[in-house]
Amino acid sequence: MRDNLVRAKLKRGEAVFGMMITEFDNPALAKILADAGFDYFFLDLEHGVFSLQTAAHIIQMARLANIPPIVRVPDGMYHLIAPALDAGAQGILVPRVETREVAERSVAAMRYPPLGVRGIFGGKANNDFVPVQLLEYTAHANENILSIIQIESKIAVERADELLATPGLDAVLVGPWDLALSLGVDPSDALVNTMTQRVLDAAKRRNVACGIHIGDPAQIKMWQQRGMTLLSCWTDLEMLRTGAQNLVKELRR
Image 1 (cartoon, rainbow, N blue to C red):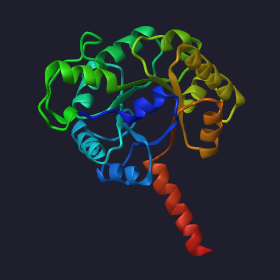
Image 2 (image 1 turned 135 degrees about the vertical axis):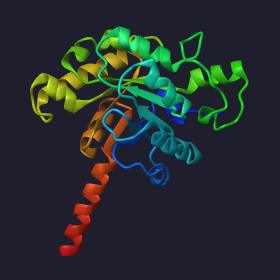
Image 3 (image 1 turned 120 degrees about the vertical axis):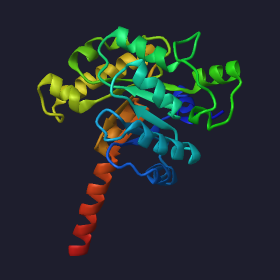
Image 4 (image 1 turned 90 degrees about the vertical axis):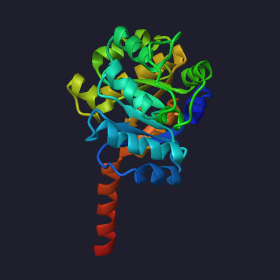
């Protein structure tokens, strides 16, 4: 059984750094990110172009490379969460959460009874294809699956204390672009930072890890200094675009 080092670090208050795979479906990406020193990555099934089978190939490579794969599902529904976990995901990120009901339903889908409602099919990629002992495996899984909700709207920020009091929730991730859209402002507007800080303050009160996904390393470091620990910067597409642009500039200089 595989321990979730990212969940353990977050529980200790340590910062973890990752990025998001949203465009390219080669399993080698997981190995490359592991070798680069990332703590984890998000595999985006909300805006990404992946089938579950394609995602499973990337997830399995990640497990072999010892970098925890966290899947962003399209919605907090059982039929979307459970297959990702059975494919080997070590964490689930649920986007656009605005109600306590959705938060509770999502977390329950990530946990086996008595803590949740997840059904078991042991010995798949969720345990590296090794047969499981029922109660030993389910207890271990309940202690190691990282449960994250994403706050991305004005109404979700206003309900942050209620949402983050959800039993079994490990972390919250702020989505600044969708938050800006819901506020009717540009992502660079000071109001976005103000609302993000409200989420961070609520997370501290509720003893839940807080983080952000954003494309600016300087902003990542700023939020780390303020107390965020679940930190995600750039996507695979941004890395390729930025690397290509910088290379061409250097070649033509």
